[in-house]
Image 1 (cartoon, rainbow, N blue to C red):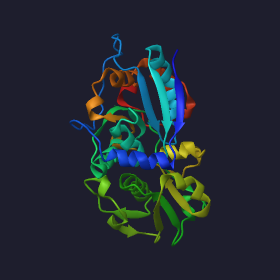
Image 2: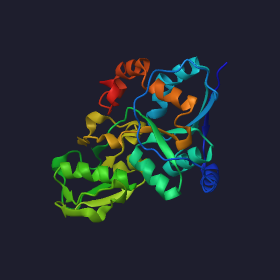
Image 3: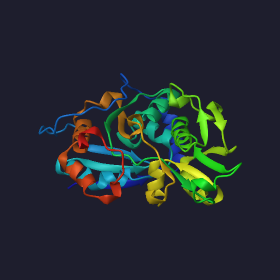
Length: 289
């Protein structure tokens, strides 16, 4: 009989994971996800898998479209909930969990470099886009001198937010080769003298009522109950900002990891996503076309 459990990682456990991450091990790094063949018929050598999630649609997507495939192949899956992007990556590297589904490869590379770990992208997953929402002000035309705007505080996602603000005509900035180096100092033009404030992703939806506008990451748009129909602008999402399943580099070619990859690339999963209107407008992997 298959096991399916969900565990919440609290602050104390998070601190433990960060400490454990200092003793991480890894192999050659890889941050690209490519296509693969269908699910192998060979019995996997490892059947117990722990997968970590941050708030957002990826857990529901996994439960509805991927878990049934893996369970049919004899895998026992345990889900572990996290609230922090650094901790969930350290948990993969330390072996506390086997994979996480919550980030794009640009952010993963940033955490790898910062924490000295070696996680890798296994496969791309459907990803909700970042959007600009009104808080105290309800339209782009309402913007005024000194309007307040929150953006994600992680550099790569801050860069994405600045792209949206530039597309609206509100700011201009110097392009950077590496989005992980972006900060507000790259802004060269601020038409309305916007008060742009980077804050934690998870705080943006609760804080929306207190600011004029917010550029919010897609998974927090979904988990926060916002509607894309209410967005004032939605990003033209570059592929490198599409989310992935992340694993240790040493595990990329393992039987269990390849089974997870094959499940995401399967026709069953494509049909599941295509048949659910909740995923309309998501950035889809290339094999969906």
